[in-house]
Image (cartoon, rainbow, N blue to C red; front, side, top):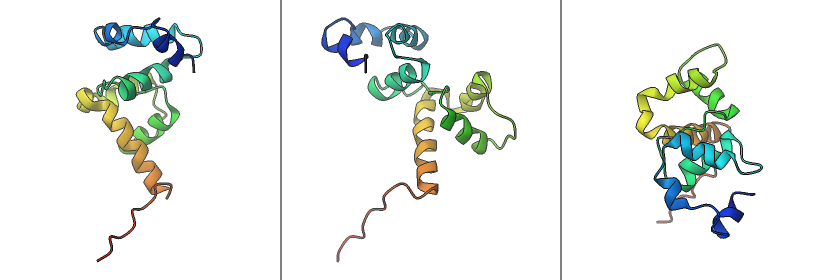
Length: 117
């Protein structure tokens, strides 16, 4: 992934990136070849701990939010924003919760083994 090279080559200053707005940080990351909106937002929430960023360009996010808020129509960018607005300061954590909830529903999360007594 092209995101690692600029970091390791000192071409991308993570401390400077941490000091700018989410929108600016997404824009800076999108300027890297191969990095789109989803990758940029995911890097912010997962790599930089910006838990207020929800990767709204993710189809799974849109589908999971659609189920959560019980709407019949597909969610676009604005609808995703409105849907996570009640949790704005930690909407990135909602993203991970919805992902894990869906994996659990489909049986893809491993179950911990019972502790021995």
